[in-house]
Image (cartoon, rainbow, N blue to C red; front, top):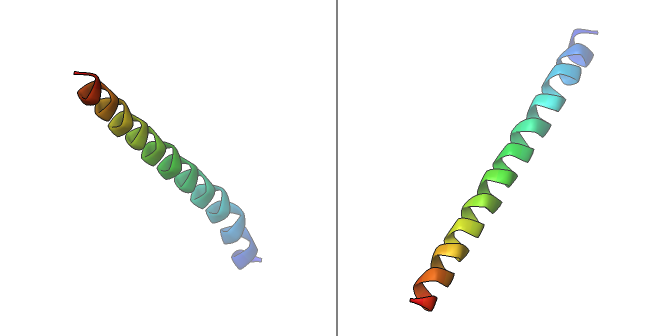
Length: 42
């Protein structure tokens, strides 16, 4: 019972952390790309 409760709590947390890290890394990559575009334009 307790293990199942832990899974019910931890699984969404892990999912949220994963989504956040993916979003942050893609945002970082797009910023890097954007900076590269500007530099190549200048």
